[in-house]
Image (cartoon, rainbow, N blue to C red; front, side, top):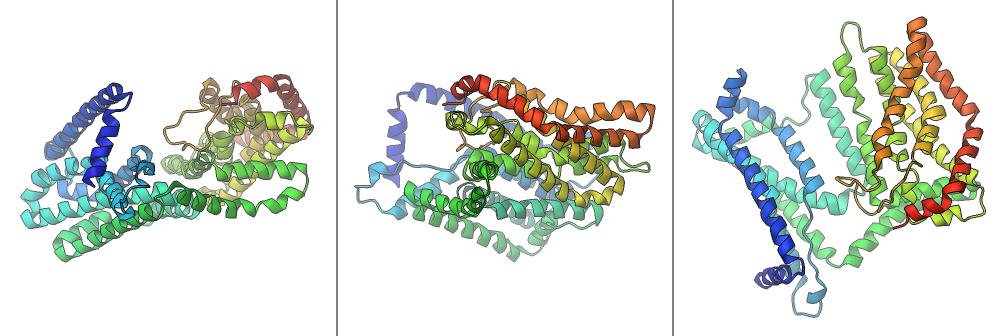
Length: 492
């Protein structure tokens, strides 16, 4: 392991960009040091900060109450920003170095991540300044060990999540289910699904329970080691990942023989499922399906949510796929535009296949909106009207707006902190999508009533559906006119 560390330093020292890299690392180290100092200051001064804000809750109780939210935030930060340890193993293949030693080095290297300093910078000052005077030395040490072990467990869980689990849909379904269940239980049934604060109190009251998070940490470390050992060679991981993708996309192939339009739709669905950027965008869209809950809960009172909020929720919910995926509708075909635009197939078929894909997404989200019946049948009527509007107007609108200077996207990169494909159009595309139904609703609601406004939204969508063929021809004409520019712009 010592030799591998020396090789890593020599490789870094002899790099042609050593001076640039060392400057960046020094700058990032200073920024990280300042952040850690601020965290230490805030944590050690928590009692004074709470007194200044006029919060009378006992500090240890408040900290335990927010432990779950802290660790969820920490996991999100790790997932977005923390990298998985890598090692160029090719120079070691002909040397007498055991795979076990390389796997152990990767586990050890991962522990040196600067993100593992965040939890100690927060919890050690808290333990000394807040918990020690209240619960005593032994209980404080148990509480500190409990929090630090959970933080380190999240570190290894993040490695497994990014390298092994993030491509599995069931993992994100479980995450979403836990978030929904915890949110609903906390806000509507006075039941906390994951009472992490209570577990912390129980642990320092019964010290032997500290063995549970330690066992979990040991399991995650061993699993991470096994993952590095079994997938040490790139082709091992690549083949396993490709096989898992082929199992899913292979089930779609039966639809390819049911006409040209279905073939084009299946090809696009395969693109979504097989590439990291498009797949992660769909997962993000799935998480946003719960975002309207915030608006509905805040707006629920004696009079209930206003019609404007209902329209916003309905448009956002049933059109989330249109906004998230449709804004890059042509960019998803980076490096493939010449394949599509030089075929003899009519452009209208290609345009209609994209339209049908957006239409199916609205139908699916409309079905998923049924639980919102909890907020009243009026909201469901609005959901139906905005769904029709999304099918007839917004889906066509975003297909046309996505042709405004589309930019190429590398599909194998994650969507987290990735701004490839983002241009000026993406900053304004959401405005007509969300404000359009309100603009249709407003005059009818002002001169007649809100029911007429909702009806006008649905009628506008129906008009768009009736004249969709005219739209297909217009977009096809635009594609044919600009096809060489599109091929040039969307080729990396």
